[in-house]
Image 1: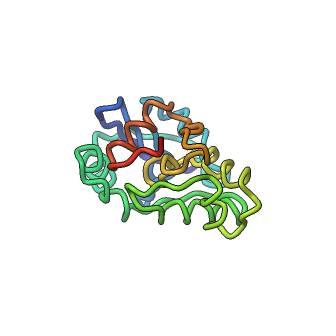
Image 2: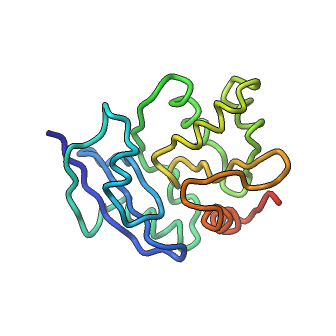
Length: 169
């Protein structure tokens, strides 16, 4: 039976919860206080059977607090563990390389992911991302400059982009 630890942090845009495995890698995260909902976003091969509440996840909690306080690079070195097919795993790695303050379109994201014709697949990588913030899918928007979708709501996506010093619209 696998176990993951989780902790919730109060942020300017609501509660943020992260789940980590035994090595401290983020399995899932987002602007919610519902750890069980986050657990269900994790690929079945990595999904913990049980969750244990912690007051803090150490480095991960500090990175969440520091990011929301203005140090947008604080999330860059946090280890993330997600599983899926080769394209999605690669696309999530590409997302982690999109710099704060320099968002891209879904078309540009597809190009950076090595499949310029696969714009829908690139959008799907954003939609299937369980580790929000640490895999910054909020840094991808539509070609027409609108925000597109975001699991945690467009007001949160808008806040994140403004917090990072940019807004595509």
